Length: 170
Image (cartoon, rainbow, N blue to C red; front, side, top):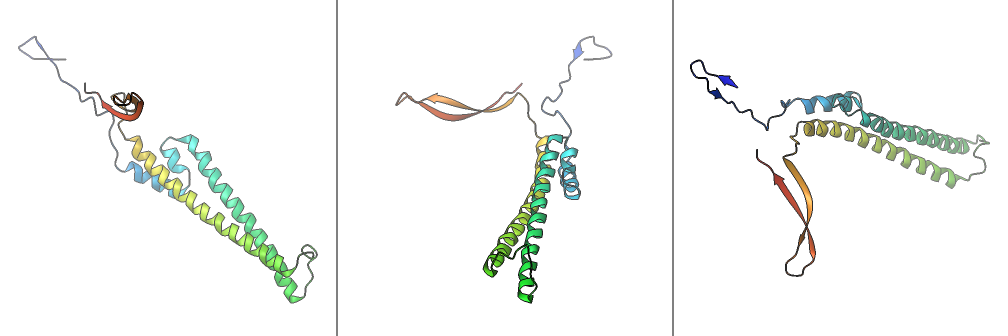
């Protein structure tokens, strides 16, 4: 309340109830940049610390499978090259040439798929940080609600499904 100099009647000043926080338009770009530099850093910037193990776990798992499949691919490729050169390999002596070629194809395909998934999870990490920073600035309060409702159908006396969008003005 503010009182005037000559009058003792109070003057009421209303405050905007819809503006709850300041909007930083660079926040989503900064979060995406941090996630691009170091995966999980954008999630830490957004204060979503529970997402960091998910991001690192997804990237770590796909990188592990990439490394494992790459190692196996090179083992079978080298065994096949040694067999063509006439050098015996005791580890894969029981496999014929077609099995060595098929094993090479199998591990190469899995290696390439693992690399593709690694890039997909890396991009998803950046997109998640950006979207989360955008949604962090979204106005969510008790005045906004979307909820499913069951409405009675007057013709058939059966419930029907619908969605109601409510907004309360103060």
